Length: 263
Image (cartoon, rainbow, N blue to C red):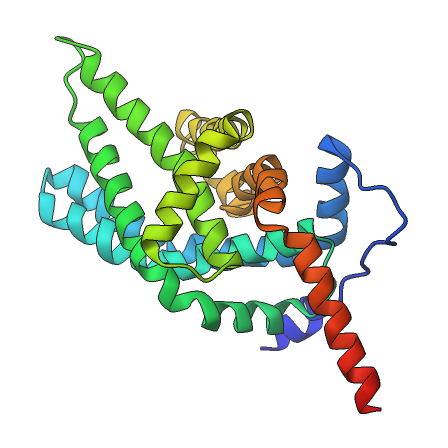
């Protein structure tokens, strides 16, 4: 616990309400300069919790067995999901320039979202495990159609899952509502959705291409780098659809007014 108290419980400096928000690379480096330690820690927790998924899937591919694949997808996905949602929550708060004590906020958000994240984690984990397992057992010498089908499935899963996990961190809605909203957001903001998927694809393609050398980069960048780039791409769509910053501002104002009345 000393680690969190010493390095990760400092309140964020926030941003002046009159300061124009930076965009693109300037915004990326602004966020990293201000919140790197908290984002990295949330990413590390998400990466560690994803190890059961990765190890079981490796066992499934190595042994050509469906049982480890199913376990990787369902159990591994459920184990990783709360921390993936926690990473999304941390980055979304950073994108909103929301100050606060990270570890206390992370734990509170984790407890609030853990149950809601399990079913999305199991479903998305199972689909991802099935797609990766299938990709490793394709025979492209006869036809490239199955390979193209798997690639399209991976793209669609990445595009929809990015909105599912973000929604779990932001709103309370049923799983059916999550899927419906995710599909509508994916199609309604297709250019931004595609950019988010592109960032994820570039990152994981680079990891796979340069493995095992890239393992060092995975320790440093874990899951936070693709998640940050992805959420930067789709954040305007989320903000416009859910009025995030307007709602958060209203909640803060109400809290401040309540505190002033109590004094």
